[in-house]
Image (cartoon, rainbow, N blue to C red; front, side, top):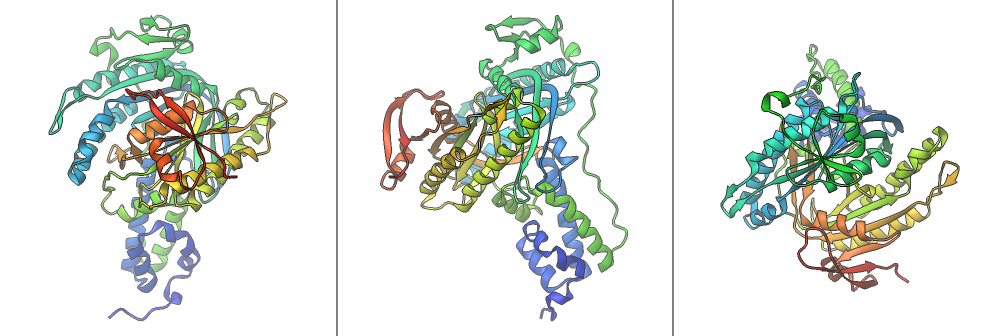
Length: 518
């Protein structure tokens, strides 16, 4: 029999923490704490929170994990440095080949993609980079300038090392046939704004300014197997690396370095591992105090994740692994136009309002997504500027996922239209959005290095297609694939706009525009 208990038997400090602990504890451990708050149970809570702190530390870019802001506290600042974008080619055919194999296919795909990411993350770390985010199978890496201003050269050396390491992923023999993975790398240096935005419930880290867009354009201009640098980076490199001009703005780096000349690493500050303090007092008061401290450390990091993903991490913390899957979600990309680009010309007072307006947009869009059961994964980046990746049905499907996504897209457009325009260089900023939707099977998994930098993410053709539709949409336009159109047409007015050529597709794709209901 369970011992008799009541809420009064829980230590007073933990009663005060109860609401803050709810989203951070597995359901079974939360119940055990409430009904049987012995020293053994409190020890399990403390150990779980310490595990969560380590997991979340690995989920965050260095500048967040090592110095998280207060919950809901707006924080921003200008940085100089070099940004490196990667993009992986050849993953979609590999995904499609494994999707029919169910759990075995998912496990095989996860092993391979994480071998790739682990190899790249190790190179990034040895080269002095900070992996800011995964965007599907792409990565964004930041190199902060040293005293000698060598960040551009550091980034180039990192890119060359990564391309050389890609040889291990060519001619992969799989049960379904032979596959190859290849990568493009783009690099640009400049000034950009970093900002922590949102609410205590959900925060986000964003990079704003044209430097981010120019880095992404360098990746888009690159070729598989090559490192592309912007003109600004080329000017900074001088004669250190031979360059092959591509156009007026970009050049490819010619890799003529011997292994000894390139080396394996740059001398940099390594990413700090989370400090693990010794637990000296294992009494109930002592454990209660340590749990209080742990909640204070975990809570700010947890706010950077959508609630469904945080819950998945919490429930899987003991196993340290989220099972991979092949769900069929509806994927939405929202490009917020105007605000990200306006910071470059803004005065300090104007920058403050621009960031606050972006934070307001992020909070309202997140609320619209969450109220319909969707997930706002993150703010990500394309050559158009910053975007928000949203999906419905990746963690628990619903028959009306496409309808919910369409309804959300319409509300987001209205939210953006109602934002009060801030000013930049004394002129009002025209804020708008463009949106793309697709649905289909994706690979949902915890990608990255299993014991280092990683994220839960979705990868696959619907993610790429939604992003490409977004880039083709005009201001205020919502574009859909035929599969989304068929799912929502009985309920929402849609207009065919013809067949569009999308990058990565061999034939034109029927495309539709979602209209506002009358």
